[in-house]
Image (cartoon, rainbow, N blue to C red; front, side, top):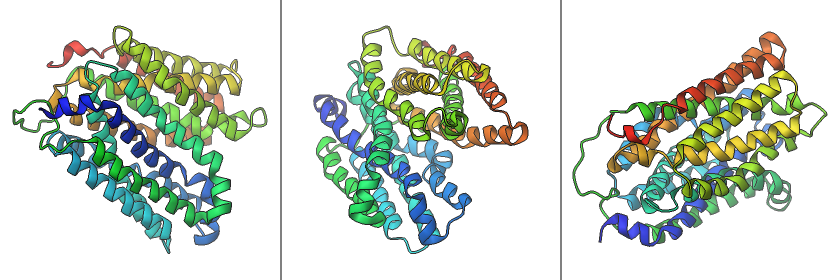
Length: 386
């Protein structure tokens, strides 16, 4: 029995284990903002240091996503998963017991490396396990886990802080990572190969037009998306509570992503849905720039885009490259998404500092979102071997 058959027969168990692991990644990423008062009081952190702690989990992806993705195409999946989860556990514990800022920072970096391995591996395994059936639904559930983790952390953080203290709360998250380890081991069969082919394939950095177009659009989406999440509360002012501005996006994305997955599986494919997501984002940000879209409807619209785009984008790599190169494809688009996540808010903030005008910021964001539509038009599964 091949690895792909083993995964297909237990695909829902693989999805469940993936959701637990990905929830742990998201919850650990989002735990910093609610803990800012405690971290500042304990360590005397500056705003810049808080920003470094937030970004530290994403830093490894920019440098390592492509080589890690290529390695995942060839590593035995159980070994790769256990390595990633072990690094996540070490990083989570280090962050929870850290005596200084630099231990906090290193803990987040280690967690980020492990999280990168797990993220790319799970995307790779889900693509294989659900190949030819319900792959978009699986990706919709998988991607919906990330906003669900943020909502959970933001909603329950006061309770956990009161019961456990901030270190106890962080150790609880480390315990969630520990729980993911036996679930992963039970879900993923013992095998020496990830891909469904037995051929030995030489690692290659070759990319086709469609993968580049997907990555560019993915980068622009994240640049605009994170900029809106960063500066949306300030833009909304007293009209809408800041927390509501952020959580509206995440609630819609959490509920909508699996529904979008079902629709994609029952339609002609994910490309049209990808383009639609970019169109929704561009339209919403243009409405914000023109001053015709209030905060709450704008955030609901951003949530629709956040349900459409990630689900469609994660359903595409398996259609754009050969089966033995899917890990590389996910690594490639992950580099671009993290560039957008890092650069987008910096450029938006610089524009806001220079102009003092949110319409200027949202106009630039709308232009970026429009360019993403142009990129998405060039995504075509028929170019797999271009």
